[in-house]
Image (cartoon, rainbow, N blue to C red; front, side):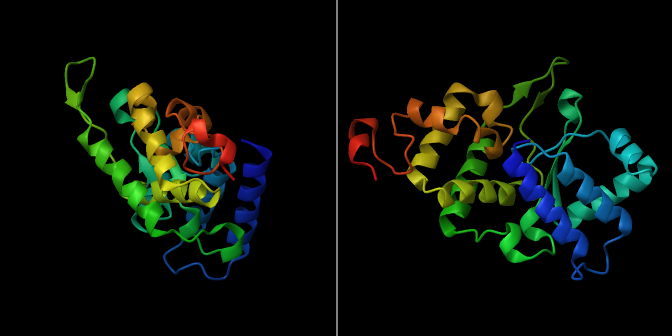
Length: 219
């Protein structure tokens, strides 16, 4: 986790713990689970602890831990990408914008452009051909409820950095052509290789939507 991401998560945790706006359905265990997931998230806003590991760290049983996760998912505070298909731990992402915290700490206004970018990414995911597993079964990408919202937050971060929808769509298209196994895991996986993918798409890494040949006039 980068220092910037850690600082942001720490600010979110402090504001979340001190907030008096938590809804009635939230239990102390729910708060603990959210805080712990935030503390171990990676730079893509994800973390992959097993249920056994998470329940041990929270000092509760597996059933109680699962119940808490399911409750948080139902209310949109976390999203989960199942890891059962490849026998790995599930991936979790805390939806910071849905937490009862001070708006200026972490929340972003999700624009129409960000929503449309997430919808397009979702449509690409749904259209991907099914993959045959080792036991011969075919399966597609399972998109959990809430992942499209998570992708909208990712797209909004790029838009806030000054990149255009055209640049972002170009990155997505190149990613699915050149690194499909990574891209199919979600838009958040394109954060680190974003600039390299822009170059592969024939665009400048400067936040504007001009080809490399015109990069000199990009402001």
